Length: 404
Image (cartoon, one colour):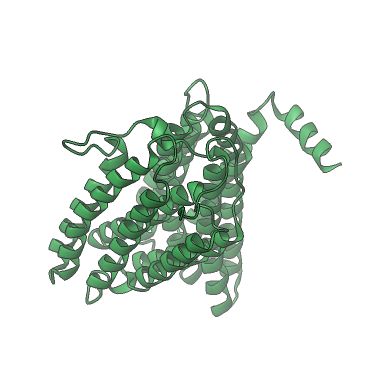
């Protein structure tokens, strides 16, 4: 009896829209992103920042590999649906362990993460067995990487010392993140090829765009929830408006030009797997990290809009802004034919650096610094919007014609 087909139809030819189950799956990662921002807010030290970074990289790796898997697997197939629901549950367990991942629940974070990565990747290799293009062998190699890294994850989770645990997990991440760069090279077996990574480009671009929405949405949730719990005043209302404007400007900066151009490139390029690896799997990391860090700054300015300016707040606001702008610029450089950085983003990076210097030298109130940072986001997004495709007048005319 033939094994049931768990794959989408015409894998290499058809661009598949995101399924309702994938959207439902992403809800867990709204929680994960919230947990990460809250952890950073509660542990705003260099060690706490490193711990947050390690957990963020794990969360992102668990999500992006699932996005790759559902590019090939059919969420409408009952076995695939059950696997995704199982991954969703394990992701919820992993996210719940984040607040104490460097305390008593390190083992739980590590075990749930390893179960996600090994189980899902091995299943994908099995499901794609016999499909043209060698993807099954590629996923089998990836499974070996996750098994090897899993030993380090579990060893770290069982190590009671937080610093040693951090070192174990950094080593595990280094091994996992090296996998795609080395094309999952395994001694005596060889390495994969980009032909093994043949994917639906539109699906990958849409999935990563949705994760950006998740991260931005988490910032809006934090802003709204924090504002609802404080006594309104002129300062807190201005802080609330500033956080909202910054979120809108970041959305505009990513989706107006970058997301659309990235989708067009990955749809029509002959090596969509290569673009997915560079521009989406790796290239989106600083964008999302910037949004998470900025959410911490937003919550802080709402609760302490006036008074002493803390170094932590400067680092979160300016550092988060530079992460997002540089990540968006890198993504756009990877997805344009001439390989150039947008001038608006380069200038924006310089302005954020000057803003950080001004904050250290002048020591303004937190609200003043936040308003200035939000203004920089608006400047960069409006500059790019106005200069793209022929200048301000043409862009506005295009906008008006679309509205009519």
